[in-house]
Length: 505
Image 1 (tube, rainbow, N blue to C red):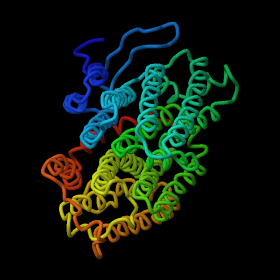
Image 2 (image 1 turned 30 degrees about the vertical axis):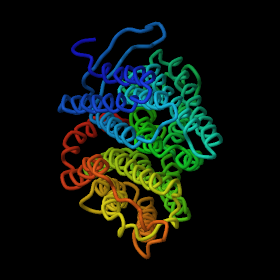
Image 3 (image 1 turned 180 degrees about the vertical axis):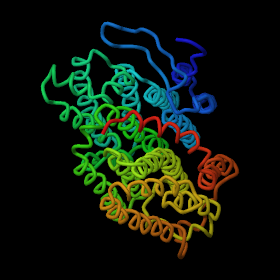
Image 4 (image 1 turned 90 degrees about the vertical axis):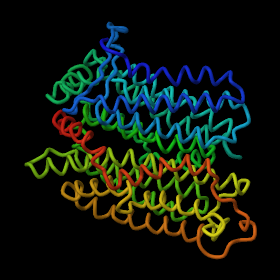
């Protein structure tokens, strides 16, 4: 290990904050806020120190258990650093939104910071054992946050969430044990290099027989649960609806990105050739995820369930882009399409995390003012008593819709720009998801903000000064990334080129 261990510090910081918050009583939220702000500052420092060529930088490496192929190996490129920044932003938003947690606040905010540490560890680890520890670490606090502070059906929702994600983790563990037994390595970089030359496939076949394709399917299934991809998505609506809104912000804004990140960091680099063999059924599942998510959202009456299914739809675009590029490039045009789609996927991960977390934050504010109701028919004409809330939430809704000029447009545009050249049938059908999503968002705006004001909403309070100040940076970032996406693209694109150069389809 050489240089200042900033990635280790970034991962340990929330753990220290969690320990302090646990014993801070009513001051736990202040501790969590300070910790989250420091975490965001460190994540931004990491973002500014990335290698310009898109390779893995800020590497920290030390022997752990060499005989077992286990190393303490950290590093980030544009993909990992962007996810660190997203996790830090969403955690800060979640902590700020949780100002009404009065039941065991020390434990609540301690678990939130523990979850943040799991996110940071997952996005920086480059050894499977190390990565898997943090992958599982994030699961435990999320379960207890739903179970202890959730809604009336929090028990079944938390159990379903835990069982689904744990099942995916078990599959991942079994598949990687097979890879380790065949290669003697758990290092992502070394295994990616082996996969790029076909050596990984040959090693697995020599030791275990022709099972590499099945290992690829197992790894895909493990990550598909986390994203989630249809038909592994059934845990999500209940978990998102029953979790406290600040926790739902973490689930949709950051934790769902762990699955997409795993596909890009592990599944495609190690099993790209096998994934290319089953590309067509995977594209079908991605299209189903996009279209089904939008139609399911249209059928809901609960605002949290609407946005939950909308998240399935938006993450389906990430899956569409990833599976579309799983084809050997034949010429500069194909390479450019792959790069566009992959840039779009990474931007979509960040932009969806920001917009979705903001929407659930607004739902939390609305529930606070109404005492709990959050049905789409429980409101009406809110732009009259609460014009600022209506205006700012409208911006977040249009960002989620993908309106040009806001951050949500850029990622979706690049995904479709790339996918239309690589898989035009899948892209064409997925357009239905965009159209239905637009109907969903416009319906929410119409029913919640326009029309006559119900009697119980006549005195609906608008956002106070503190809430406006807290939301201002988030809304500003939506505009900034919509108008100047190059602030992210210029750092992410070299990583995209570097990744594509090392992937074998």
